[in-house]
Image 1: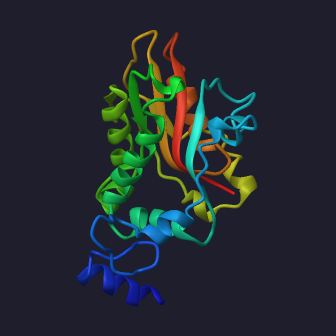
Image 2 (image 1 turned 135 degrees about the horizontal axis):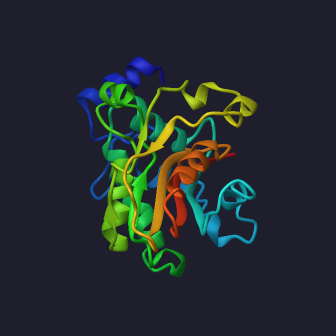
Length: 228
């Protein structure tokens, strides 16, 4: 289906599946039951070969790291993220946050989370989009895990090229961090750092290094998806 037809459908008939544009039936939200069954679940922290945590080895100290889905260039997950980031459907963020929260609420590795912090976006990009696409995701996780959500700890001090437009090498080769720590965190705090899609881990590594400027804190990571 062409992009403009899809946008027309979503504008005038919002109760359609964001994965396949079919009408949603009673009890379905955001995506239909068929699309939901086709989504590749990751939850990498449950595997011995944790693909998410492996990205941070020898780069930054991370307690636990996980992603909800596997992200491919085509498919339902790609459609969801596209709707979230480029079509103004910020409700996707909360939808994915509730999904992830249901998976993590009884997981021992996430029971002592004190603070949930989103990867920040530059003010200009936030103004253009109208929101940080990770906020809803983080707020839902904080609510279920019994922790606080705080988006003011980190800022993005200068804009960067959209990571999705960069090649793998360039994404991994940021020499100067665009992020700054602007608020202190109490010693002993366990932080859950959240983002949308993780590819090389560079963005999250830079944010985690800023957070580690606070002494004696722990950092875990949760993302909506990991690119494959």
